[in-house]
Image (tube, rainbow, N blue to C red; front, side, top):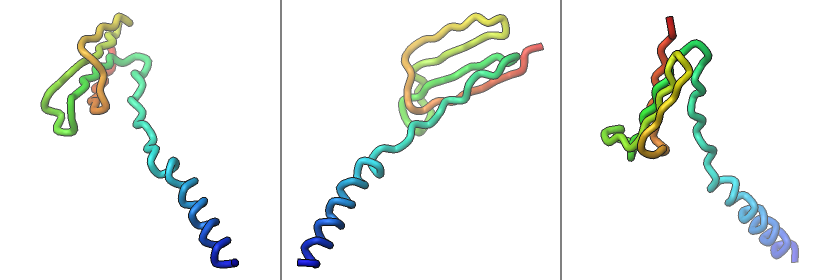
Length: 81
């Protein structure tokens, strides 16, 4: 009887832990700092060879974007004068 209870507790604990282990946290994209121009390039995969989209926020505050966003992103910021 005790063996059955222990087995059930272990099974329930393992099942409860699966969603926590399977859900990986999303990586945060760095925010564009005030007083900086910000450019992001989105790539199709981890090789960072094929851009699929982009975003630019200028020092004047205008922004433009093209393509689509993706998991693989490179952000470049440069200070405004």
